[in-house]
Amino acid sequence: MNFKHLRTFVEVAHCKSFSNAATRLHTVQSAISRHITALERDIHVTLFERNTRMVELTPAGERFLQHADAILKHCRLAKEDAQLVQRGEKGLLRIGYLSSACVHFLPHLLRNFSTLNSGVTVKLDEMTVSQQLQAFTESAIDIGFSRPIEKTHEGLLKEKHLFDDPIVAVVASDHPLATKTVLSLANIAKHPLILFARAHAPSLFDNLMTAFHYQQLKPNVVSEPKSMQALLTEIASSQCVALVPACIQNLHTKGCTFVPLQAPMHAELKMLWQAKPNATTLTWLNWYDAYGQDIIDHYSR
Picture (cartoon, helix red, strand yellow):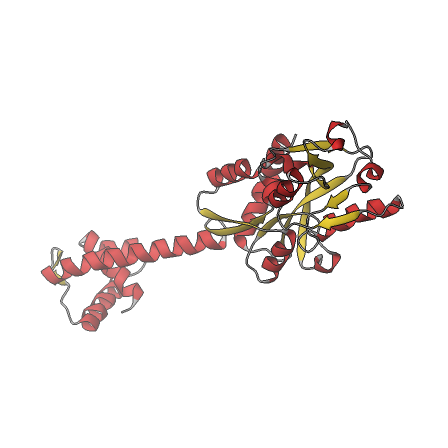
């Protein structure tokens, strides 16, 4: 069945005139007649009763018109839908994020984005830095909220600095250091140290260890939990010390006390995306340039 013939049939059926249909379709009446004849021959059905005064649909033509209208509408919607996807105005946006670093701003960020981009469905996955890198390698996520990545991945991903999170010490509320207003690395190095697992956040772990070594201190790392909540649980139940980004205070921290460092240190949070982003990612990036950083700055104060 020829799509052009189908469109011609619908136009004639609604106009009840070959000449008017020709005008609307910007063609000649003889072409309209050929299309209708070819369609009737193709489906083996007489669609119109013709006379010198008017054109009327046959009962079979009436039924066929219902299907033809639906087909043309579906084709129009399919075209519009495909165009929306190509422009990134419709589709799926997959985001990997560090829950502890993003919990204070991500809901507000996504709510604003979805309000302005209702055709885009957002899928969230809580992931460590290493899990995000693996997901990017497998094209399983489009956007990542992460700590800095290893330089070996820089050519594959693009990044944007979001904010610097102060590093703080965390101890049990009954720990001897809990009463201090500030702590030095020398104070901390005297106690068993807990750090978030290097396998899941190598840049954070390495930067903290480098800071100790720069001061010729040898920290005693006794545990590397794989989640920040597990780290807090270990701290609350022990006499260890941990060094963590200050955003961890947004998690369940009962039994823990956070103490600033004497010499400030920071953990950077970045937004990552594929070097060759898809259309939906571009929609996110364009929206972020207009609104995103202001939202993050507001909720990260």
